[in-house]
Image (cartoon, rainbow, N blue to C red; front, side, top):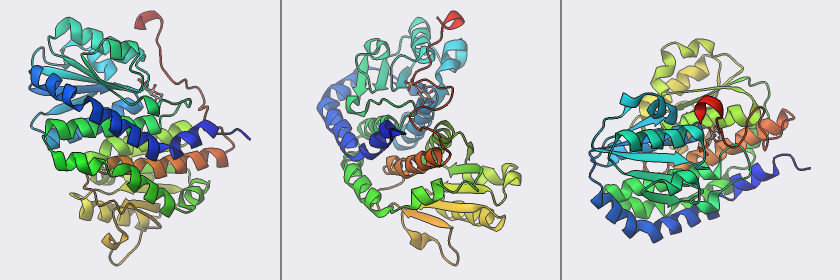
Length: 354
Ligand code: F1P
């Protein structure tokens, strides 16, 4: 049977594909350093659409908190359609797009060129694409190209490039070294997962999925929400963990799965939210560095990352287990994860969009 063949292969190939992305980054590092030195900017604006908008959110959190340059994430359409969304001076535009052909992101770049003198840096899987060709510098992960509509290895590989960019901008050699450990950390994580993503993904008594993540993990919680929606046509939401108590938790019942992507900085408070949701009847899944953080109670399921990496470095590891879960949920519902309903790999607008 061919159901989900591409998606499964793309999820499982991530250790090798991440290694290729890191090797590619190392080869372009000195050119990147020259580009960054020559481009005077006081802030970065990161844009993308759908998955790559959520990737822009994750990149913006890392760039803002780990470098001296603040970064804001916007959906590409905000820059395209709202001319004053971005200051006219002192901005480096970071465009993120798997395909490099998404209309809104191309239009955002055009708008920026019309109104701004700053440089454009592009992160993509397709360095030959129009978006990349129109940029001043390109960081590419061609080995992460995909046949599936839903982004899996492309997302995590481009995330890795954005974290490597952060390390270079921060002159943080130790962070760069740590990022180099991610491919083998993912191999170890895959080996330790057993059938947990399959068991939880196939539990169709779950009808509502909630992903919680803060700081470096908020954009990734959003991506987990989108993946579940695209692949398995499920109601899914994402929140900052402590925001979930401010109203959204009224929807929690025994058909809810709450998935917590646990950080280091917010750990105690995030664990408390997850515990509260279990008490309200939700099934709970935690992605944690180590299960020893749970004292006196246990979530229903725990995935231990055991990465030895800090919260800014280990982001890419949270997604592959959730991608597997979404894959299994899709198959359990009789769907084909390779072909999400109503979606195409790229949104190319005609009419008003051209
Ligand atoms: C982004 C996009 C997403 C969508 C899906 C397919 O395209 O269209 O909007 O959620 O995952 O990809 P791109 O600009 O990154 O190629």
